[in-house]
Length: 153
Image 1: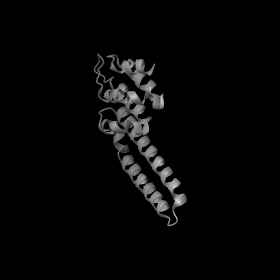
Image 2: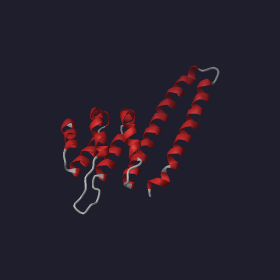
Image 3: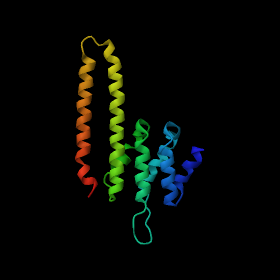
Image 4: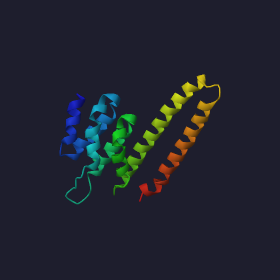
């Protein structure tokens, strides 16, 4: 049934596309096959009769959905990063959160692998690597946080 939901990503109606992004964001690995279609929604443009950008809701929902998929969304990180420059603050904020989730998920996976290796590490090299990864993750989070001020402008 996720295939039918994914088909809704191609609908012209932004509300339908937004709902499809949200649904696919909630289905974990089962929805991973449809992430390319979700990523296409990052460029959705739709303007209301009064000139408001209503496509922003679709773009933000796509960022959130991709952010929930961790490594499976890695091929779409450029699109998410590009959304950091969107004119709409809610899209920029969603992109920021999605990238932050990806960084945190990546760091946890690498840290777990190094932690597992440390059992067989009489020289403490795995512990040193784990500390370096933590410092790199902190630095990346700080760099991502430095863009935070631009999110609300």
